[in-house]
Image (cartoon, rainbow, N blue to C red; front, side):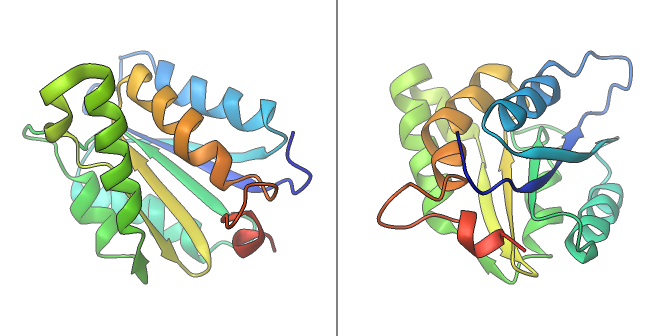
Length: 164
């Protein structure tokens, strides 16, 4: 379990407000199990500006250190997560998307090319954007996000960067 407990927010992007939020539930539980705090959790309807509204509020909030977004990264009419988040980044963590797609390819094959998972930094916070699929979120959490939020991960991690 992490010794640095980060204050995290979870944003689920879904155009269907009636749909169960299994992926958001998983991310919140995974954060808590890893010793972090889920201090905010919201849903966005997938509108580019609604996503930016939520992200901007959390980027400016000193009580949030990490943001996890799920949904809106695959091809379709509501693929707005990437352009919404990318416009707010101070710096993109390009390796995240590359590694996620490589891991996803090993898991699901060529369908991995349709995921625009990405991560970036804004106001000293790390923002991870993953697909809405619970399986994809579990893969991203297990292989990339959780280790990067653990200060014991060497040679580098985001835990110390984000800790207030």
